[in-house]
Image (cartoon, rainbow, N blue to C red; front, side):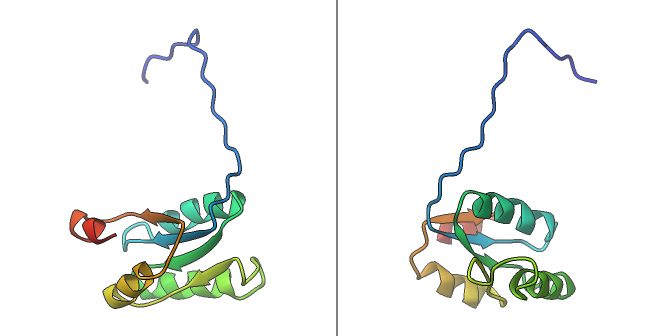
Length: 112
C-alpha cells in the first residue's frame, strides 16, 4: 500500500458544462471502457455524442451500437454511432464538433 496523508485536504468537483457535440473516437483495446467512460461524462455534462468505435472489434462494436442507438436505454437524438475504418474517422473530423475524446497512437493523434 502507498502512504496516505489524511492531513492534506482534497477537493474534487464535477460540474455540468455542456459544450455541444462531443466526438468520441475509441481504439480496439478496452472498447467498452473507453467508449462508456467518456460517453457517460459527456452526456452527464449535457452534450450530444458521436461515437466512432474501432473497426477491429466487430462484436463489441455491434453490441454497443445496438444498445446505444436502439432507443431503449438512451434517446437516439443524444447518441449516434458511426461504424467504419479510418476513412469514416477522417470524414467525421471534417465536420464541426465542440470537443473530441481520442485515445490512440500519435500518428492519428496528430490528424485529430
